[in-house]
Image (cartoon, rainbow over all chains, first blue to last red):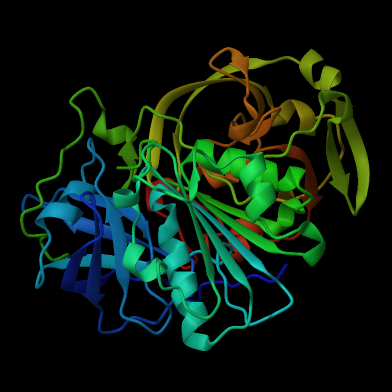
Length: 248
Length: 202
């Protein structure tokens, strides 16, 4: 397989917050200005570093939410027991500086206008973040690749990027399933992603699709396993797991 | 000099964590997070083997029972994932790679571990000998679960945990170093957590 090696050393760069925008009651998107940012690919992540005034340092990794060519955006979910995410979602404001290193990761990425390879994106909760980068990238480059996003959220108010996803444009298909609470008259899917829902929503395997799955570990285990059961070759199912397990 | 993060105080490490055991940039978790690039493979034990390859040929192979019949060790180790979590005092049941490598003649200087699912990772031979590396099949006195790499994974705790390849099926012995999966995707070729060698060039 072709590696997309990161060239040279990734140095810490000072990133200045230019805007913050609430996405849900516990999720916020932060935009940064980084003077020497080398650009990124859709699906990559960055490391961030915070330094307290007594020298205490904390590092974490976050997926990139913006498309290649756009200013760097991170979308962060506040975790109740978190050390870093409450700071990023509640304290950080425009003008503040943090350190960022990246972009990182060359496997869970998408960059294609290949109309013959349909793409299935399956998101659990804040696992939708790298897919927002991919969807924006697809729109920006005018990609002809068929894309379908299956997004599992607890409830409609928990859907991140809802305004944007409700107008996907360019034929990208967005399918929600709400696991805990549905609004009155909800005509969409309810309940967790399972074999039946994937059979209905996933591209048939004979079209040789490429699947990306991102979410909490249990979600990814189930979805990736079901896709293999549907005939997806394991090396066409790319996974990324985070959130919910000790990654505050 | 890092800029100060206005209003960031951090939680500090719990007082019962010995800070000297936590490498730079890591935080301690009591969970056991799962990270992998693709679906979890499920190879039946009756089809499972662990092989040593040299020059493209399999020169030694053990089936599941043969591995289980080898002397096992209880290994207690701190593990450090490049995604920044560390977990202290993890307990494994494992066979030392010294035991396996002693059964083959070779002059290798590097190994490339290969796995179900196509994952590979490279290590210097000097890092998988001398009581530093194991083939682990038990965790906390239970069989190693598939999402954590079962039926068996490498355990090389002195390097970042991506070197402890899940679902490992063997080692290819090499004269020259050859980058593995994450090493080709921009991660560090060696991966020493104490020198924070996360990415290429670190």
